[in-house]
Length: 77
Image 1 (spheres, one colour):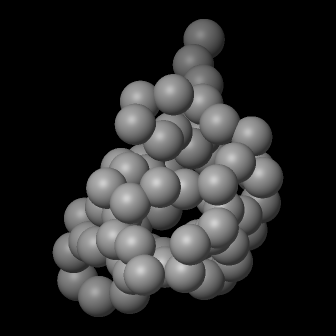
Image 2 (cartoon, helix red, strand yellow):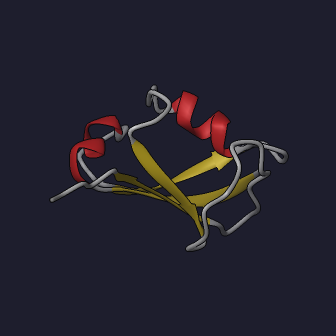
């Protein structure tokens, strides 16, 4: 098993498994960003995902100790 930290911001906080917008998840080795998104029942799109501060592909494998951040898209004019 591996552990990652997850942080959710803005309206995405509603997908947290508890009352905290930052939490740890235990995952099987080989888990991907897409796996975590599905675990949290988070729809695809309308947010930006970062792993350790970088934008990843959906199929990138997570590693023990990674920090995964989900932020809503922001637009302005």
